[in-house]
Structure formats: C-alpha cells, structure tokens
Image 1 (tube, rainbow, N blue to C red):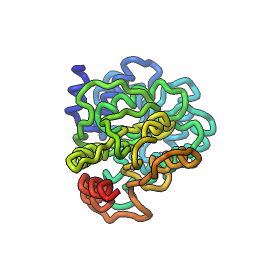
Image 2: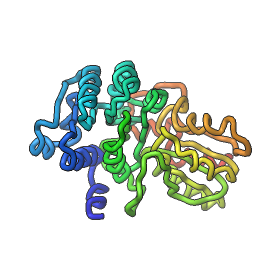
Image 3: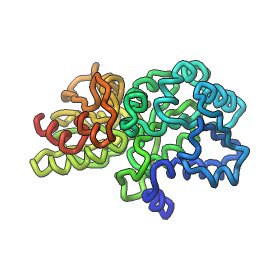
Length: 314
C-alpha cells in the first residue's frame, strides 16, 4: 500500500522507471533496451545496480527490435522502450517478422502516445498504434489509465510469454483514477462506475474525463456505467456483455476511431443479438495542428464537456 501511494505522486515516466527497477531486482534474466531515451524514464538506480542488464542501441528502432528479439530467444526477459510512434509505425515490419511471427516475448513500451507530444506536430502524435499493433498475431495491447495501472501493467507484462505493447499517454502527473489498491489482471476490464442507462468503455488517462462527464450526466438523471478496458487485446468481452441492458454503448479513446478500442467492441458485437447501438468517440480521419495536448483533446471532443454533451444528446 505504501508503494502505491508513492507511485501515484510520481510523474508517469518515473513510474515506468520504478516498475522496471522492481523487475530487475527480482529477475536476473531481465534485460532493458532503449533507443536513446533512458534519461526520460529515470533509471539511474537501475543503471547503478544492474549496469549489465541495460543496452542503449541509439536512435535506431529497427536495430532495437532485432536485438530485443535475439535476447528474448536467449531466454532474457526483454523490455524495449522508445517513443510510441517510433516503436510502432516506424518499425512495424520488424515487429511483425521478429516479434509477432517468431512469438518473441518482447515487451514494447511506447512513451508519449496519443496527443502527448502534439506540440511537436503530427510526426510525434501517436493515434494509430492500437490499430497497428492489435492486428498482429500473439500481440497483447495495453493502455493504462493512471500510475497504478501503468505500474501494474509493466509488472504483469513481465510474466507473459508472448509479445506485449503498452502505450503510455502523458509524461507528467497522471490523473488518479484508483484511490484504493486494485486487483489488476491483463485481459480483465475494471468497472469504475456503476450505472444503467449508458455503458461507457474507455482506456488511458482520458478515462478521467469520462468519469467527470459521467458525474455531470448523473445530475441530468442519466446513469452511466464506466468500464476501464485497459487491455484492448485480448478484449474482455465479459465486460461488454454486462452492457447489453444499457440504452447505448459509447467508446472513448485517445486514438483514431479506426481500428482502436471502439472498433474492437464493434467487431465483437457485430454478429451478436440484442445489443444496444454503439457510438465511438476518438480522433477522426485527420491530422492535428501542432498544439498542446489539452487543446487538441478539445478539438477531438475528448474533453469532459464534449463527452458530456455528446452522451446527453443520445
């Protein structure tokens, strides 16, 4: 419990570093690779205690994937970290061939996903990574919503014997979704608010905006059930089943509406009976101007007020 409280008060990238150190302390086969981003995840203690369990390949993500695959096949518990757009789209073919096809259990950590680096323009925003990664066989795809789920996702991923991709949105203080210790399991969604009228399924820190919108909707006598679907693949269909009695299902994600969480839900319910209509909130078929994340969230109608108005109109 003490560790959880400390983690919730840390910046997100420091949480990533703390989780990696915790794994290194327990696993002599742990190996961390980075594409010149080790200073961004604050791993000074890890480098001091376990210098031979870290390798910086430089700004060379294709090489990163190849080396990580080789180490994984030599029984190392291998993690590879870089910025989200560069550890997914830039090296998608390498991931397909060296990780997915070969079932290499490498854990890919994508920093600054979503609209985090929106002030650097479209090249540094990452709104397609879920769609790209979840199409690959054997790949698990995770999107944590706060520090606690980010920390637990990394520790849980270390025990999976297939490739994993975890996208992290933001770099500073994350919104605190869970104020109590939770039982976290990859592939198992979490109900964070009970309700009966609208079923909202979300992932990532935008979940905080969803919860705030749900509180506003309750004042309008609209009851919302909110699911944290932190694992997009495999999708927890049992949590989707719980929404069959709602008037509508709404997916909310800091990702394009093409191929993300909303698409995964649509694929599941498309051949099922007695489901309410599904509405998807995310970014549309466009690139965003270079601007701060909070400004582009509003443009994408992913801010609290826009989510509230969208659902109220339903």
